[in-house]
Image 1: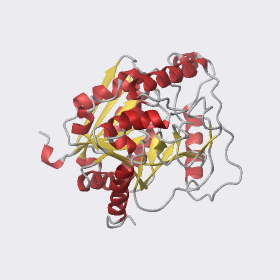
Image 2: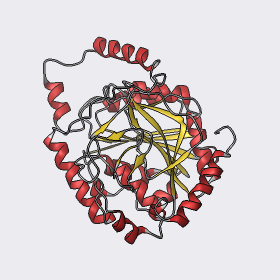
Image 3: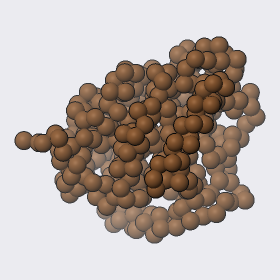
Length: 363
């Protein structure tokens, strides 16, 4: 029987078409996490590849205190996350995506320590680079003049005329050093939170199903109940989107039915190249020529994003891309959403930042 007094956290992985990247993710878990103190729950969201088999084989090597795979029909990451939360029995939950690799040791201990030290923290996330060294996100802005975008990047469209949160200039640079810092919200690629706080906000909102910006909404929901969202720069994540399968239903099944598919040898070669390049990621200086902004061209994804932006406006009372700051003040003035707009809240946040800077080993 599992001794729950020795297991205080669950690693929750929503899985969809991650066959080729899961071995890399699990390799870094074995290397950099204390798996023996963690329960792992994988919710497979009706994957069209062989990811479940790969997860079973790779997961067994990690020595988790408990390991469970829940297989469901495809409904999207939001439903998968909520199914996983319902199965959690630990105080702390570490959400990690199948295409995320955490590159530093003891990252779970550091995130859990922040949650223990500061009851007002609702979620801790890390700094995330794409595999090519370009910034993905050093936290997410949502409550300022420029609206929703990745910190560490610069929106490619003018304020008031933005169309997608993904249209940003992404510099190539290393991770930032320094103490933890507060942000509006954060990516869910690698994030830690308390199970009771997730329950208090009703889990992940199905209005943002099947995928995308559900993590931003979750962060704001935590803020709405008085919590803060924090980035720990010591948690350094590589987002290996180049190794994962498609998020669009039917696409991966069609690819596997095609005569041109990845062979085991080609996959191994790709992984060797990726590992060699990974040794360089995080060592880049600021690039003078940021990556050209990603352009949204897939009608399926565009339709989902536009629907989510509408749901955001209905739920939060302001446009996520072109916010009316007066509308934010009017609706959220007394809440932690206005941690920068409300002077009284701003004073509290500066005190909180000083407390974060004083945590041993994080200055």
